[in-house]
Length: 115
Image (cartoon, rainbow, N blue to C red; front, side):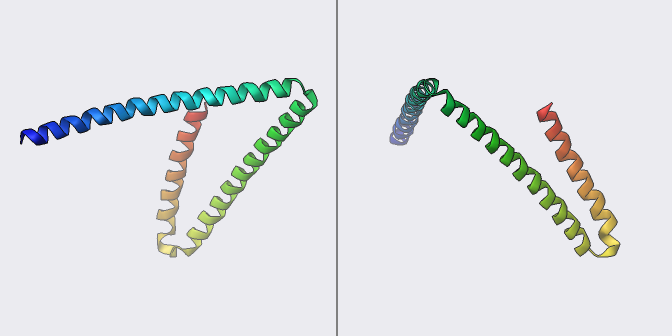
């Protein structure tokens, strides 16, 4: 029994060391990222036309992501409509109410996060 206690204690201490090691690795990773960012910014400052080109490309990427999200919403809407068409008529009203309630909750959570 005493050995189990010693083994358990050793395992706990080893886990503590691993967590400290993880923190160190994460800190070094962040430092490397910061150095890369500094290097890239330095290069961009010397090339204003490249900086502007990158700015435009990022704006286009953001617009594309928004369009993708809008398309996904449209697909979800079409999928919900199709799903309702597949529901037997006598259950359609109940299922519709459940879906509306679910969407209202999700939209409310989304709105709370964005506002």
